[in-house]
Amino acid sequence: MIKQRRMRDSQRAKVYASEKYTHTLPQLKDWDEMVAYHEDITRQRRREIAKRFGIDRLALSGIRFRRNARGYISTGSRHGIQMSPTAQTCRRVYLHELAHAITEIVYNGYTEVSWHGPEFCGILCELVKIEHGFDASLELFRNFRRGGVKVKAWTKKS
Image (cartoon, rainbow, N blue to C red; front, side, top):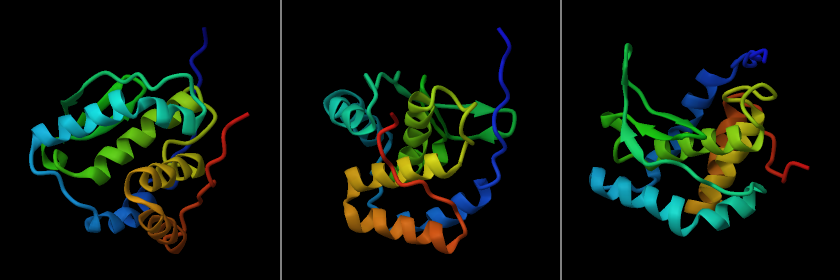
């Protein structure tokens, strides 16, 4: 089997800069609260989220710290969410990483879409709407547009 290359990630810096809206989102108190937040989404609300994104199931492993050669980073994939200690109470980072996991599941890897591409941004806006309401999602969308980030509005993939 030939491994396909990922698409170029040309929006990464713009996406990070535009996500500053989330400083208005409530922070979690500690790591235990982050684990509970993850459990709520992946256990109690997984059917609702899976249905919204048109996927069979949202089955992510637990949440954990991760350290690599560059230091602590947060990552999200179909295998789970890994948070850095510096972001352990940040809902913004968690939703960003969850959007990566959902994008990878919906688009069957990142061979069709780029890591921070328009499809990812649409899924992130939809997740923010689910978790924090329409106003927070609209604010993120507007920040993306001001920052020159391309966003593909979420519609179920056919």
